[in-house]
Length: 129
Image (cartoon, rainbow, N blue to C red):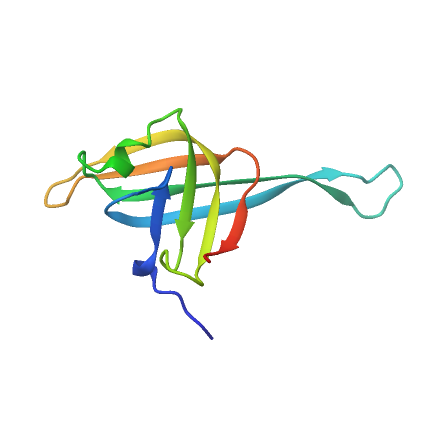
């Protein structure tokens, strides 16, 4: 079974690498609509629209152009590379709205940020050429 090393992942925003990434998440979901009626013994449903969202976590670097490009309310093209950004690897991409930006800082730790995003339209899974 092939395994992906977590520390190989990379992220770009608008074509600019995001520095000091420590983690990212990607969530895909679909809505369901009840299609059952009175007298049905079991509930049934049909599939509605799809959506995607997630987070990008970084060690905060106010000089990093990738990090500073992500501001709450902005719309950007986001690329997530779970195996790194080399030929033959997976690429997940689409336009997102950045919905939240959280800062965290504690004693004896480096300051960090977490960017929360909501997909705006199609999510695409590619293989890097």
